[in-house]
Image (cartoon, rainbow over the protein chains, first blue to last red):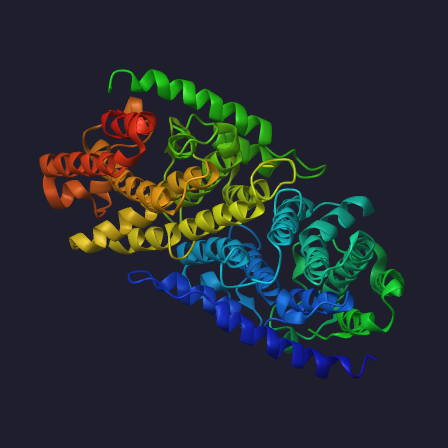
Length: 298
Length: 298
C-alpha cells in the first residue's frame, strides 16, 4: 500500500491543481499584486493533503468527487493563507517555504498580509458561489461552511497558532502540546475529512467515524512534521531543518524522542484506520493517504 | 432629520453592541490573548455603521430586525478585522484608533495579525451557526455569505486596500480614487445594506435599489472620512488628523478641494435617497443614517 501511494497522490494532486486553477478568482483592474501573491503561494507545489482527504472522504461515503471539489479548494485556500501569515516576521519569520522565498520575502509584508486575508475570504466566497456545488442542498453547504469556519477560527487553527507561539522556549506538558497540534494542524485536516463526508451524503454515524479518522491523521501528520524537522532533508523539504529545536518549539521529538514520536504516529495511524472499518473497501484510498502521511519525506 | 439622528444612532448602537456581546465566541483553554485582542478592538467604541445599515435595510423591505442581527454582527467583525490589519506597521502603521492604542500597539503584531484573522473567520462561523438565523431559509443564508465574502475579498475590500497603498505618494486620477473608495470602504457598506434586504425578504428590484443606496452612501462615507482627516478634531476622532496629507494619500480633498468634496458627498446623499423612493416611509430610518454619515464629527 505504501509503495503505490506516491503515484496515486500525484494523480490526486493533479486533479486538485486543475480545480484550483479553474476556481481561482480573476484579478481586479487596479490591484494585481495581491492577486499575484495569492497565486504564487497557492501554486507553490503544496502536497494538497487537505483537498485530497476531502475528495476521498466524499467517495468513502459513496459520493461523487466533483461535489467536493469546491470545498477541497477552499480548504487549500485556508491552508495557504495560514502558511503565509505564519511565515511573517512577527510570527515564525521564515524565509523559505517549499524551496521558494516565502510570500512576504517575495512581495513584501503588506502584500503578504493582504494575500493571506484574501485567500481566507475567497475560501468562503468559493463555498457560496452560485456556479459551484449546484447539486448540493443549501443546508449541506451551510454545514460545510460551519465546519471549515470553526476549524479555522478562534476555537481551531488560530487557537493552535497562538498556543504554538506561547509554547516557544518553554517546557510544555503533553496535553498542551497535543492542544497545539490538534488545533494548529489537526482541526483543518479533520474538517477536510468531515466536509468530504457531508458533501458525499454521509449520515451522522459516518461523519463521526470520519471525524475520528481525521483527528487521528491530523495529529499523526503534525508528529511526522516534527520528525521531518529533525531528521528530514532540507533539499526535499524546501524549508529549513532543525528550526523547531533552535526556536525551542514544543514538539513531539522534544518530549518523546525520535523513536517515541515514531511509535506515537504509528499508533495514531492504526487507530485512524480502525475508525474507517464501517466503510469497508471504499475507505482504502483514505487509508493509503494516511500511510502517505507517515511515509512522506517532505 | 439631522438633529434626531445622533440619538437614534446611539439607540441602534446599543442594540448592536448587545448582539455583539451575545454572539462573541468563548476563549479556548490555552489561548486567550488573541481572544482578548479581538474583544479589545471589537468593543473599542465603533460607530456600528455597517450593522445599523443592515438592520434598517431589513426593516425597509418589511422584515423584522432580529433576522438580520447575526449578519449585522458578522459585518462588524469583518470591519474590525480590516481596521486591525490596516493599522499594522507594514500597512498604515497607525498607533491610535478611536482614542486608544491600536491592536498591535497593545498586544503586539503577532497577536494583532491573528486577531484580525480570527475575526474574519468568526464572521463566517457566525453566519453558519446552527443557533442563529433559524428562521432564514438556507438559500438566503448562502446569499448573505456570498455577498459578504465578495465584498470583503480580492474583488472588494482587499482590492481597495491594495489600491490605497499603491496610490500613496502619487498623483492619481479620479477613476482610480473612486476605485479605492468604492472598494476599500464602499463594498462592505453596500453589502451591509443588501444583506439586510435579503434577510428582510426583499425581492430582486428592492435589492437593486438597496445596492444603489449602499454604493452611494459608501462613497459619501469615505469622502466624509477624507474631509474629517483634514478638518476634523483629533479629540473627537480618536486618531491622528492630517495623516492622509502627510502620507500623500489619494483623497477627495486632495483632488477636489474641501468645498468640491463636500458638494460631491451631498450630491451622493441626494442620489442615495432617490434610490430609496420605492420603499416609502419605511426607508426614512435609512435616510436618517445617510444624513448622519455626512453630519458626523468623528
